[in-house]
Image 1 (cartoon, helix red, strand yellow):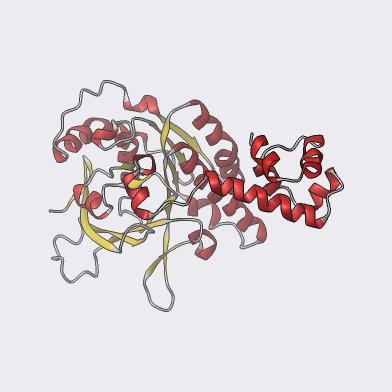
Image 2: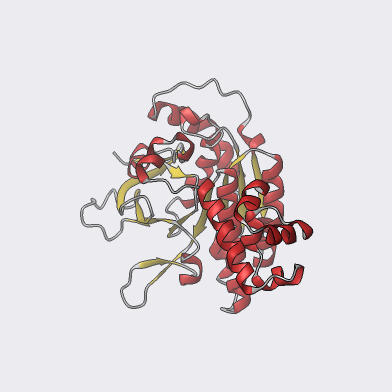
Length: 330
């Protein structure tokens, strides 16, 4: 309520009109269109221009712009991170995946996209000091049946390896599986329903730090390119961004790749329609054509690359997948 400020800054007759239509919040004035305001009371164009000018001054006075240094020094602007479980990857990610925006992990089959997300579903349950977010995970499958056997194996093999790599001991007693919520979507419409209705409801009632879609391409590659397809993508993308912002969660969408017909390079699927909805883009690739890796290692080593991110430069490291999950190749 900014009644006093509006009253002191507006002519009495104009303020009285606002009181009659029960508007006493400057933000209401900014959000309402000129036509909406004129429909409420006999405001002239000059009146509306003055109302919005005064409302904007009040709002900007409360929400002063901050310098980069002020934001850096202010702990309330600290962005939390979720470790990925491999020290080399976490190093080039500057500490892990950030709890802002939507991260895309694309890659060829067999590069470990699902493996990374499964171990993240475990890491997120650790405390922030240990690299997690002390929260649960939502895992949405769109391709195959959820890999429950592999996850059960990781419950046993991954925690000791994770604690050894990051040099800490944990007295974690909670059953990891109790905090991983699994859903399946077989088509785009079902995925929209889950993301836009079911997930927000669950996050409002449970502490969730990770949302995974595995994969976004599976349901949209079979859809013909159309305005409906684009609208569904936008609905999913905008909702995921809102959830990440509102709940401070890491959001990951796994994507498939296809070869560029002109360059032969592997590119994430779904084109610009989806690319413009993601913020951090990571790609996993095999090393079949990498001359710096020996022939014997090419079948076991993969490359983790940051393609683009608003807070990180492009970079890459090699890694391997074993029974304890994703780990450094060195």
